[in-house]
Image (spheres, rainbow, N blue to C red):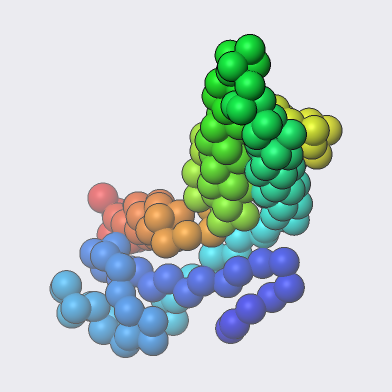
Length: 182
């Protein structure tokens, strides 16, 4: 069947006799030997663009974190040369390191949102991206990712397909049992 725009088509086969998964195009079940002709099902998962947009905004927030950390470091580097300003220098270095760490968390969260794999990390990255001059960009990414939570539940990775396959296996098993009358 292939790809449709905005959707992923996955072919999953199940034996009508025992309900176990069978390979694409298989004619017989490897588990029970039953005929598997015409038992392939298609699972269509619609994917919106919201997690992608939110992830890109969170990554932009990470860039703002890194640029802000670099800028704070550049303007305060001279403070370390003067003993009377050394406490200010140490404080700004802590702030610079903190912004760098927040930038890394933001970057990882943005990548998690792009891949739709880890909603919690995507939210953490969105929150971390709000602590620099790019607060509005990070906040927009955070809100968009939070609004698209369902996209993460369905996901785009192999874990979600395995979950979908096991759900369909149960329904195929139930159908086979109902056909047998038991």
